Image 1 (cartoon, rainbow, N blue to C red):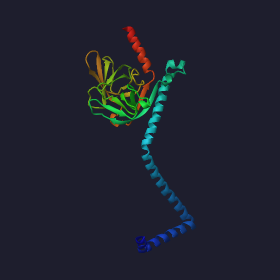
Image 2: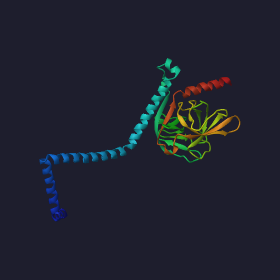
Image 3: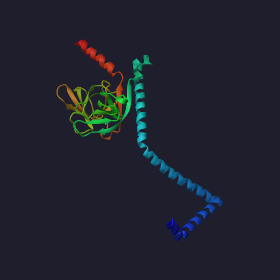
Image 4: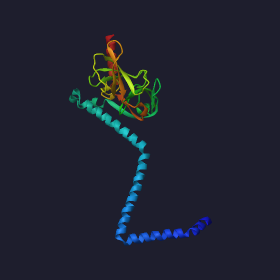
Length: 278
């Protein structure tokens, strides 16, 4: 307390100056219309600038929550889009109340671990059996295909990435509707993959869009990538086509786990058909 008193005594002239200066400014502003308008405008600009900076910091600090909210909204919109696409089908017109409109369910998940440059790459997500995740479900992003759920625990799941030699996904050339199997194989570059089993009479060109065929775990017409190299001979009657993947696997944050509600029914019917043929 003594030190504070000594400080005030030592610099009393400065404090008196500040006090009188503030008082004089207040008197000028109060009794002069022009100065008062300038003061009000200046204070509004200053306060507005302060609030603007505060809001910028608040927005920055809430980015994670905003991203989660946007991812959830994207999942809902993707499901609605799938419903609309199904409604455009010929069969769906006759059965407008069919549950076909709700064939797919999308669950938002956050990537908590990811490998890109290994020979066999895997991804870990923060959703598991408690969230309805099962082994064998497809995983996508807003920009393309990611992989297939491999193992599941109550709170986490691992995904066999598209960048894995054992991952095969049914895709189609958008320009011709010819379908084949997309594999990463032993590629080193995570940006490229190969479509196999394409008949060698099929004409393709660089830049052609490649989409999911709808024959596997994924909804139809999800863009996977673009053709980057054609006419790669694989022997026999088929060609290999190299594509540049649309998904940036080195920058994955939020993904969507896709559940086909008809998958089990379809598999059971196909197994019955195979048994009958046997």
